[in-house]
Image 1 (cartoon, rainbow, N blue to C red):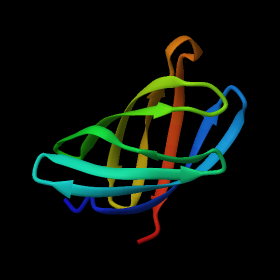
Image 2 (cartoon, one colour):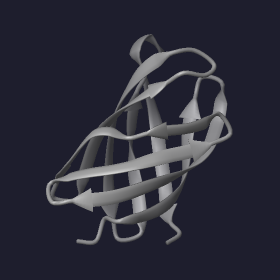
Image 3 (spheres, one colour):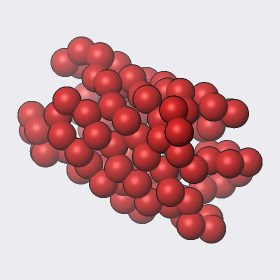
Length: 99
């Protein structure tokens, strides 16, 4: 399954819906990439791939510093998952491949 690409994403956060572009670059059973949106750009860290499921971490610095644990499943051109944001709980992530 081809996981590589850019995905227009929406995350439902406590401060409202955030839009961003998630870039995924697979390297065997690992991957790298970034997510870029209104709050800036964050590198995807510790990216792993199991089947069509991606797991990674990110460090958000704005509006406050917080570690994010992320999981997303890609089905064709659709991405869906969760972002765990410490005491903020889990937030829904969804997206569509654009490239």
